[in-house]
Length: 76
View 1 (cartoon, one colour):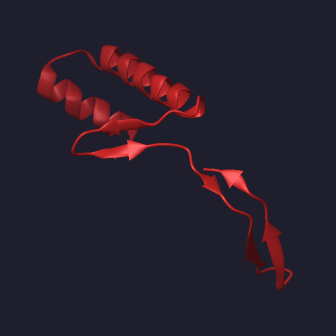
View 2 (cartoon, rainbow, N blue to C red):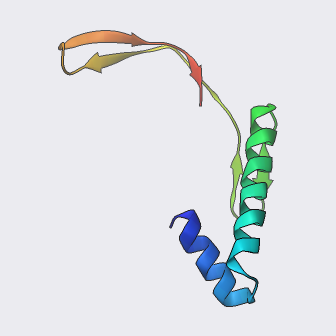
């Protein structure tokens, strides 16, 4: 499901105009992204937790050059 499909379903069920729902969904996603980027986590009961984690440096494989490469540490 993409954002458009989510807005369409919510509009059909609620009767709220799609433009309004799209604006609120954008604000919601923007707020979530800002909270997570600030280093905080977001938890929805019975759904899940969203947070940034640190991925350690690791070995990877370059299929074009057929060599082992070092994938640097990053946040994900």
